[in-house]
Length: 409
Image (cartoon, rainbow, N blue to C red; front, side):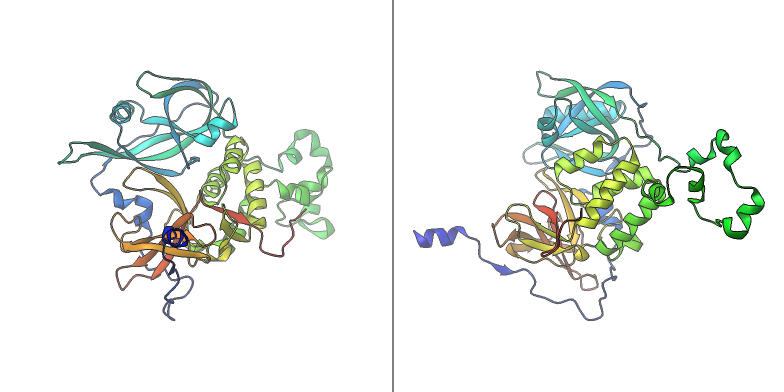
């Protein structure tokens, strides 16, 4: 019996059996980071679609909806799909011929609320392949998250396709925190221009110099200034991602807040909470609090430490975390780290269908609970740096405080 149990446990291989060459610094990445962002593993013969569909805020529409097991799509996030069911392929062809827009709703969202949240996805490119031996067709799609919505009504057609009546949720622009001080009714309280330029009343380039006209001190406005929040998040992320400066990030606070939501290791409920916010300021404040609290990445099942937040880096120009699809159509959201602990390898390296061309992948499992937590990627080309890195699944990992740290009030 004991022998049978031992045979059920995969052989443990050291997941960190090589060291980086001494010449490789923490910032060195010679890999073409545009390849994962373009999902080149899907092939270079996909047909691109032009134009964009944008629905008016607060309008109601009926669209087909796909449910996803492990992905809560956010606006701006790229979602690759491989579709095998003939009915869903036919549905996608009809979508492509019309406005190219469908809905994505996470399974956890369907159970969390009677009117669940979702995100519209617009098809950007596609191709259809037919297996010569079996004759089975596969539709490969790259879509992009566009707008948040809430499902008002839904029905399942006889062919199994879910149709939903949705309401587009508004994305409010980031407010100007100094607007209250520029009301005409407060003109009588403004200092003369000569006093604002010199002397003890000079405020120079202080962006909160208007605070003396209001009942609140400058630090209050600083907490709700979207541009200040963006700068604080960038400072926090620079501690997470050592090659953060190489990323091309959105400058608009609203789009930036969605980028952060798609790049953080948030569980489904927290990501749904981010989608529920109409204000980018509220979203940015929540994201900043999460970033400040997180010290390590741990296994969601057993709590074993997987990596420090300083190990996070980006192998894609879109950021450290992205969504990738495997040959069986299963979508994984994965964050890349320079090293991982408490893990072991299962199986042999394979470069087939690698999400990072030039690297071979090996299944990664947790030493504590033996659950699948990601992959190790090893270079198959001598000139690539880093020579190896790890990808951890969002579905299997959660952020946590460092050992010995107390939660902030």
